[in-house]
Amino acid sequence: MFATLISFIQRAVIQGIPLLFGSTGEIVTQKSGHLNLGIPGVMYVGAISSVIGAFAYEQSIPEGGSINPFLAVLIPIVCALIGSLIMGLIYSFLTVTLRANQNVTGLALTTFGVGFGNFFGGSLIKLTGSDVPSIALSKTSACFKTTLPFADKLGWFGQVFMSYGFLAYTAIIIAIVSAYVLKNTRVGLHLRAVGENPATADAAGINVNRYKYVATCIGCMIAGLGGLYYIMDYASGVWSNDGFGDRGWLAIALVIFSLWRPNWSILGSFVFGGLYVVYLYIQNTTLPQQELFKMAPYLVTLIVLVIISMRKKRENQPPAHLGLPYFREER
Image 1: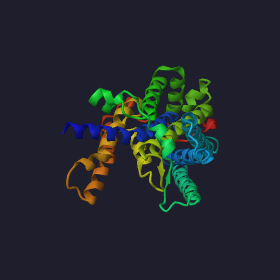
Image 2 (image 1 turned 180 degrees about the vertical axis):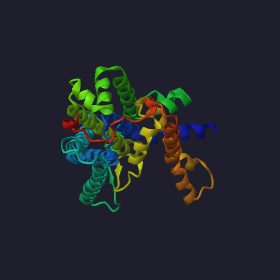
Image 3 (image 1 turned 90 degrees about the horizontal axis):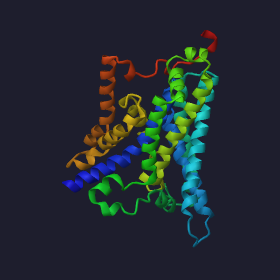
Image 4 (image 1 turned 90 degrees about the vertical axis):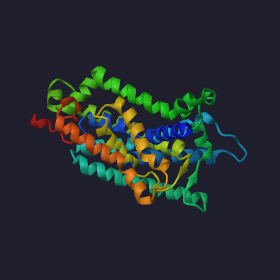
């Protein structure tokens, strides 16, 4: 029983880390007043960008040569950051500069990101000549999945807290730093002011468009790391088209569950991760029952949304200007 509990916690954490990356990035973006529904597409592009980088590096190694762990980690990370940054710039240009509808732009970005990933993923699969519709980057993945050498010697404590790759701890650190910056720094205060009332922020001398651009791009880069983690750690370096599932949408739901607080997203991501895999630990579940269990995170999010809407506490509400374009001429 205890071993099953340890296994469940581990799987919940591993399942939750991509959601933590995505929700942290979305919170940073939403604090600037932008509702980026393109996060699933951004995470998808981050994943395929890392796959392209890792594939190119592994192909460049001569037969019988050894992989450089530093480059094997650095190249996919840089590629994922660049790919997700480009997505952020596209979204920012359309919604900040051209003032396009944020909901439509975000959904279009998701559709584009999934199509982009499937196109290049399918192309790489054809290049490998694989009999199965997937790419295996096991050498690169092994570098990302490396754990602390003394974790196995610490018993259950090591299994629960020390048995993950470095990106898992990176996600937690980014969430904590983001929470601190948003709450305790001048930059965070300015960003929250832009999201609450951009006209007032503009009148106070804050460059509204710059904050929106920077927050959106940084948020997309953080979310892109979620796609990188999913492929290189969770999926052990195996890419298959449409294999990402609904994790991008879960990340957006987690933003509401955590009440727009990145530090709360840490616990929320593990709760969502646990709800997502709990059916694996319940005996005699049929396929329809499994799908019902997978709905649990969304159901919990709806309950939280109803509760915060009824209580109407301002600190638990989204930014007042979320999803609305800012026209400086109207202030």
